[in-house]
Length: 277
Image (cartoon, rainbow, N blue to C red):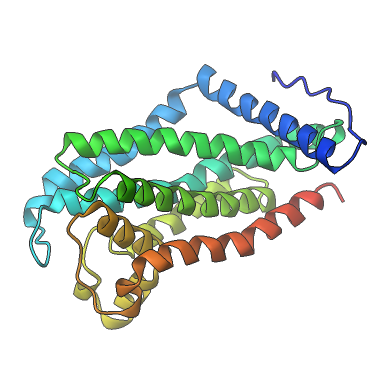
């Protein structure tokens, strides 16, 4: 462990405390980045998995898929996979938090003169940087299989922003679950739940092909909202749903992450503050 956080606690005011909190957070962010640099295999495998999904669904199953209204299936698929990649990040965050807690690293940081928020803030910054890299690789993969953004740079940037917003919100779900569970086996259980969340959406098929009650769940899935919104912003083909959720996907693409953050950010902070009691 390379963390050499011997930063003295600042008592000169709120500005100084914030400066030290940011400095401590960045030190702990660097610790996570150093771990990934020294052991890149899990990161590389994490990047390869969504790429394989794009290739399998795009080339093996894509020939059997018709996009209502026309359009290339791979252009439809890739934005859905972008959103799926953001959802899969829950497991990465959860596993890292559980591992640190199980090894006593989190308790050690809490016993050191560091900002109380630095541990979770450093985790969130590191995972967001990891997600930016992962999304960049996925964009390159999409371009390689024929996906394109047709609506200009500003709308493409807005779509990327919505994807990272979803990741940021789900990051706090991962931190909270990582603080609640102490066994890495719990990650397997979460994986079991993340997969249905991913497939019970419009990432691969139209909700119109599902039973009515299942289609309603898929329509209101946060992943569906982000997937539909990014397809619209990228100018890619999508399902022409008639539900309120389908017609206001961009609005929901902002609201869902805000709601998730409003619930899990305070839960994660409260759980972190109660550790060791």
